[in-house]
Image: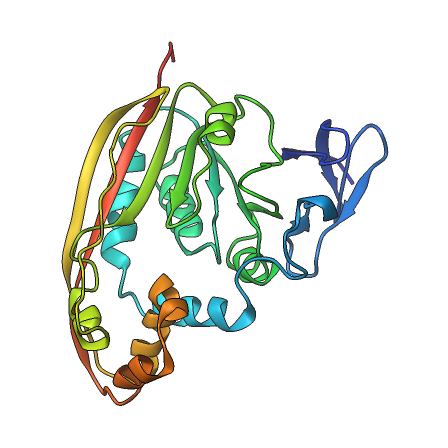
Length: 279
């Protein structure tokens, strides 16, 4: 069977990886087997800070179930619109891809438009990547750390960072000069009505400085609207997707457990940066 060149690097020696059958390997004979679903684990044991790092099965299932119902389809469409403005063949890396909902949607939109695209996703959670790999067999997915991305210098011209940890040094390293970084963060009023129910004194999300060293702000989109959630299961799935879930006491969580429906604002900031230098 012919080999296919991977977007990923060997985490042991840093050489390029090739894919043959269900195995990734480098010229130094380091090899990594694909999981049954199709992702590969490229995280070394010394890069882990937990026995089972990243999102667990319940967290991944909550996010999958919520997103599959289309509550955030407006956000996905807005990200796709931003990506479509970039007029070139695409090498895309989703840094912190989670269960691959956005990676898959963007990849499919690019392919449908006739664009030449190669895509990969990296996340620390094997449970999230198990789900991501099942969504799309054409996208490479690897367990890895955003702080030690298993990809080469100047290897992608679009990097996605959607509700994920941020590492400027690594992102700058892997994006080509003139390439793009697309970040998504919650807007000030995101999930405001949910927060009003849970907290006695809710506060708006803080938007930090938009300046990023080595990058210029190319576009800034705000995607906002309202969603109506008509069952408690979806309400609790949404809550489990947020950092509030893990900072909230049981007494305050009970306020949501009795809800049968919820109307709440959603608001996202989509920040498109271009890496300084010639394209």
